[in-house]
Image (cartoon, rainbow, N blue to C red; front, side, top):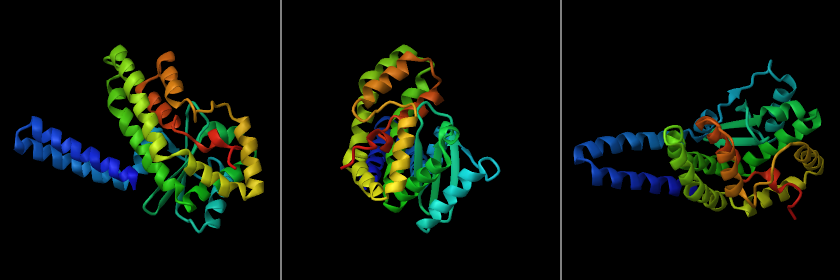
Length: 259
């Protein structure tokens, strides 16, 4: 898979830099530590993304109807080990994260407040369908790479704000937009939406929900709009990471345009 290949190239580049600038003994020690971290990232990409989204797990007592509908829709596709998380974001986004035998549905909390029961049912159906179609696994790794691309500049943003903002605007944002289009090209989402469209009731409810949510269409202007959001508001680094993950092209951006 292309996402894993890019992660592997990143690991090779790190090893080369370590061996170039450090004593061999120190370079090998650091390289082994980073390699262990690399394997952990590959095994638990969903856990990293939940951390960066500052998501919290939803139990049945929190949202009993949403919890029941999510379980019901997952069971339709013979998926029984699922967890549901919510997070506070800037766009109303949903994610189906898949890694190993784990399946996690992540929903921006305002969706749970705004959506009707029928729309919630259709929403969780689409998240389960993503996992069934293999889209969720690829999207999880693509989002992980997005978070890694943003990690270093955002960790420096408080100390060297002006310099890092310039760096983000003219270097990081375009690279992230390019990787997003390569790792999750529009035709992948369009193919998924064509399958979803065959389920007419669920697709109609999702289109209704898509128009109800207050979010921009980022599919044609991701780097420009993200740059604007990063520099026009004084968000913390953790909030900017949420913005970066939410900024990746989402099916809601393309809803109603699949042919």
